[in-house]
Each structure stands twice: as C-alpha cells, then as structure tokens.
Length: 362
Image (cartoon, rainbow, N blue to C red; front, side):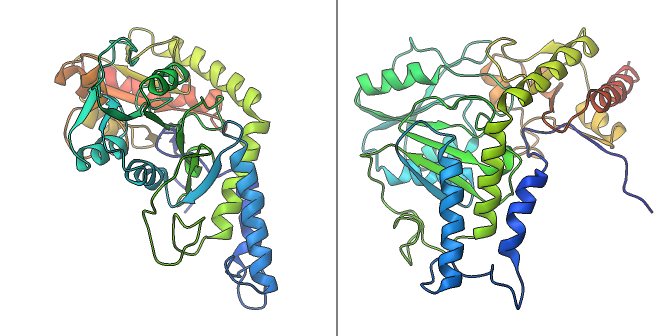
C-alpha cells in the first residue's frame, strides 16, 4: 500500500524538513563504531568534534539576527520565551500585544498581572495606546502565527527604550523569511524554517543578563543546563543558512502562491491586513461555514481551523476575537499556510477540494 495522497497547507504549524538539514544531521546520529555521537560537553576528541559542530550551527543561526548579541539554544521557541520573560525578572509590569502566542500570554499571566496592547481590525498593534507607568518588559511578535500580520517591531523597540523597558520579540514566523527586526530578546524555532523539531533559540542583546531557567550542569553559557544535541543544532544551522540563501527566491514563490490564492478564494473574507502581512499565511472566513465538517470532508488537505497550539480547545481564536470578529465569524475561519515546497498545482488542488466541500454546505 502506497502513501496516502496528501497536500500540506499548514506551514504556520510546522514546515517540511529541508533535505539539506536532514543531511547535516546524519553524521551526528552515528551508532556504535561511528565518531559522531559524542557528547559536545566532553573534553575528548569526539566531544570536541561535536562541540565544533554546535558552534558552526550557532554561527549560522546567529546570522538570522541583528549584529551582536548571543544565541542560546533551547528546546523550543516556547522555552526561549520563558527563558526571556522569567530570566530578566522584570520587576515591573509586562505589556504584550493581544494577539501574542500563548507562550507569551500564559507566561505573562503566570508572572502576575499584565497589560494587553490592543490591535486594530487589521491586526496591527498600535503605538499610540497607553502603557503602564511601571512597564519593564514589552512583548510584540514580528509575524503573527494565525493571521500573518507584520508588526512595527522596530518602532516598538524605540518606544520600549524611551520607557526604559526591554522588548521581547517572538520572531518564530519571521525568521528566515524576512529580516528580523531589532529588539532586546528574540525567540525563534527551527521547525518553522525547515529545520528539525525539538530545538529553538533565544537571541539576547549584549549587556542583558538573564537568570537560568534550567539548572543542573551549567551548559549553554550557564543558562540552560542539559546536554545539547549536535544533530538538532546542525539541522537548525543548515536550515537557517539555507533560508537566508534562498530568502529572495522563497519570497517570490510565496508571492506567486498568494496571488493565485486570492484568485481561487475570491468571495471569501480575508482576516487581517493584506499588505502588512507575510503572504505565506492565508486566514480567511466564509459566513456560516462549518469548519469541523469542512476538515472532515477534506481529509487529504492539511490545513488549520486556527493555530495548531490551540486546536481542539473548542474556543474561538483569541487572535480573531482581538480583531473584533464575533465568535461565529472566528469559528467560520480557516488558515492555509504555504511555502518553499508547495507547488501551484498542489495549492490549486487543495483549494478546489476546500471550495467544493464548502459549497456543498449550502
């Protein structure tokens, strides 16, 4: 029996592993008799070889970020965000845009009361709203994972500096696709740019001190104890390098897909800004659409009813609600994500299946 025919349109949830990233990982997955399975924290030759591979990967990942600063490898972007928010011990109020990922909002809530920064109907966090007098940490993501809107992060960094606060940027959906904006701390994830799952990174501006989130061995510059995986680091590094090398080419391909998508889904309503947006994210709605039924009728098309992190909760998307959508409108929305390995033909086939199934609902 062959593999089932599926079309993947959920690039915001995760991206296919780049062949180049897989190849970079293989030497560090050696079994008995090999030399690539060494612990990168060991002092012998195999350990030094593994440590060298980690540092090469760190350099490739560092190239994603503004100049200077340091890269700390983590197990995910969620861990990176936690390290940033808990590690700075803000002492004052945290302010975060209302459409941040749950990793930011839940962590802010766990640390105490926080201030939500409103967004407009296009999904943009305005700079003219009030901030708490004692704000010490501001969190604004660069590209939203549900609606793809691009925030004015550089302007938010200026505002944070003027208030004596630090700016944390979740750049998970931006890394490798567009230039990452300036901030004080930036979180990214390998598997959102065609790298492996299970590894992320936090970039920290020079001069910012963090308290360790995970203690026990002092690895990763004393901030994240535990043995690093050279294979995951190598895969992340290769994916980051490839993303930068292909950035212009990938963006042109995504734009072509976006243009075709707007033609195919003519008559559907776009959620979020069409202009200030990463065009690999198509979040659309159709009044009265039963999304659960739609997904059941389109089993071979992989798309989302919201962010993968919140699927199954039954709750309307907090991002769509923040735009001013009603519960009914939010629940009649779908998200299609596409990128480097999506062909026009595949997307046309996926769109045909979705539109046909939607039309059958009446």
